[in-house]
Length: 164
Image 1 (tube, rainbow, N blue to C red):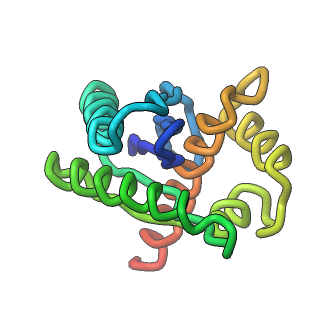
Image 2: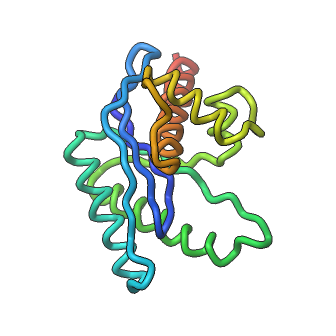
């Protein structure tokens, strides 16, 4: 199964493509979509969705995993912007027939490290190990996107086993 993981953001949107087969992961590609801060929000979101669509189609992605927003009372403004990005990405992927799943940061951390309150560097180190990489993927948003993809692989595998 080829999975696209997404760490959504308006300024920096991380993405990572992973092959998941027989309980093993293989990195395919990853990166970050950067949008200009002074640009109109609609144009920035369009830039993100266009690139996500291209990445999904060029890599023959079968499904996608998106990290859900982590809300705090001090992050409401940025969370609202990111929620718009998530909605646009889900709409675009749905339009091209790619199903999406949302996972909270807690779910992703638990899946990757076994501990929901793991530090960012612990998650990144496990992503490196699980994907057999020599070093932690950079930038951080790309590593976060890869962790979202791995989370879907683990969850999808478990769900498939439970259906048997």
